[in-house]
Length: 185
Image (cartoon, rainbow, N blue to C red):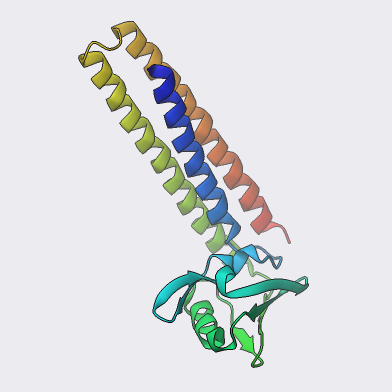
């Protein structure tokens, strides 16, 4: 019973880490990467779609992204979504494709991006702690219902805390790697 609970908690915490990693990919560094705009939400005929569903995204040069919509009529909607995003990029539209030139990051912008990364890291830590809280509640409920002994409860609490510490350490490693990526010139 405790093993099932730990397996479930570990899976949910790993999902929180995966979401964090996916989220951080979209934060701009000095290099052009399609992941920067792939998950951008675009309103297209009344529904919200991700940019990757509407266009191909390529990197023709080191500091440029090229977005080629599958349907030419979605060009304006994609352009609006890019302008409304917090990427700080200005799209240039030639009627068939959208080009995004990524200027070199200023020192101030790099520090802003690091702050944004730190906010996302804290969100991930909170998610992991919430999973720990829910799992602890389940453990205590098991003990109240006499499904596990008091010793098993304490052992489970320790295991859960070790798992939480391990996952928050991974959050720190992911954050450190992204911060270094942002700060490199």
